[in-house]
Amino acid sequence: MVKFPDVAADERSTLEQFLDFHRQCVLDTLDGLSHVDAAATLLPATELTIGGIVKHLARVEDFWFQEKLLGVPPPEPWASAPLDVDPDWDFHSAGQDSPADLHELYAAACRRSRRAAAGCSNLSDRAARPSFGGGPVSLRWIFVHMIEETAQHRGHLDLLRDALARRAAAPVAAQLPAQAERLGGEEGGEPTPSDDDDGALDQAEAR
Image (cartoon, rainbow, N blue to C red; front, side, top):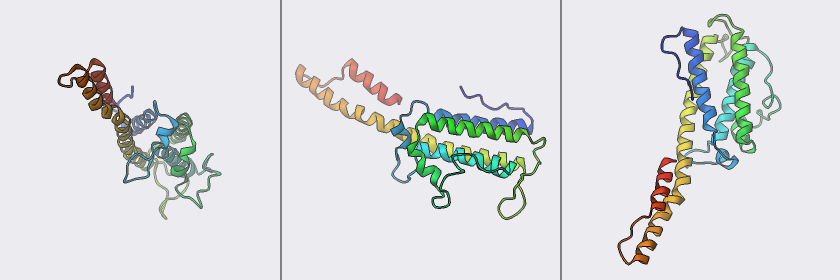
């Protein structure tokens, strides 16, 4: 179960705990998914996939905490990724990765981020590399931005999981009227759902 952030922690602990809270929620999104589920385009208005979002968030972790804060080269898979020809490679390539691989990719990036942040004694410590054509951002800024980024995409993941659950439930729900009509015809009376029908409906609504 995800632990909600403490309600009266100091500033740094509050930032760290909120970011970790959203990180864990992202990881939990992958629970129970098949490879097909993670790679599926589930909403007509967007090509975002669950796997693509998780892989993108792993890239963002390494970008801000490794490349910017520490000033070190990006780790794999970003170091050899064709980002120069496909800036959205993290989104586009995720279909090749299993949910287990995506889970480990993101979890490993988060572990690196925690180690990088732990090396800074103060939230006002500046990153090794500048950003936005100006000076380097502070660790505080990185935390706030990463909370924003992760929470935003967590909302996208919630929508995609809901769409996946509804799609999985639709075939079950569609069978119920036909089953009820068949049962009613056999008994010569009004169609009534059987116990099995109620169970199927409960399962469909619970997804």
